[in-house]
Length: 190
Image 1: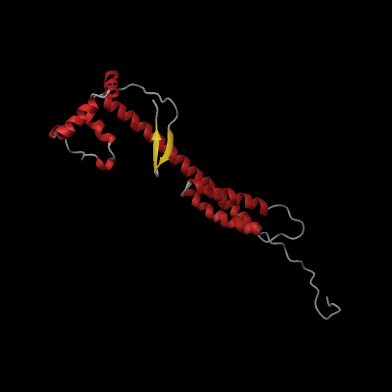
Image 2: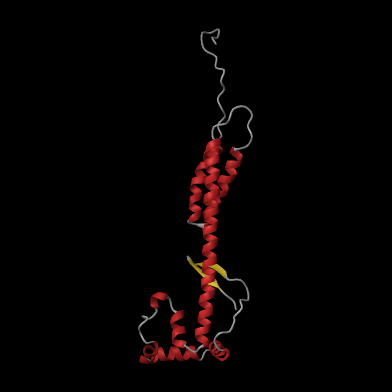
């Protein structure tokens, strides 16, 4: 249509721009970091909030940014749920392994195998080789023998020997998994 001034009049209006849709896509992509670190799951929550803002109802034309918002929502939900599941399963696995180790350790002490129990208290890197006879090692020096004797005469260890192996130990409360100086640890109370 020609205007009076010799120009064209545009009948089409420009669709609105929803920046929150593009931000949702960005945070949806960043929510993949939730798999690496538990605190990074916040990015998935932010992406969902921004996506819901971008998908609010519109009247005339479809706004620009709705499609990126949908993609961002899908990514945020997928990565967020995957990250949550990974951290939950990791914590549960550590708790189960800690409980199993504690039960085995109590049975070893209850059987009176103090040399093995002392090795189990050490970090895996500092343990003696598997083929090495432990009693020969502890009897080889006075310091090692004194450490073994102190461990044997400990009151709790003597009570475990008196009770004997095979006792069905019950957990007093659920296993608590926590971070201590960057290492995951578990606390058990029998």
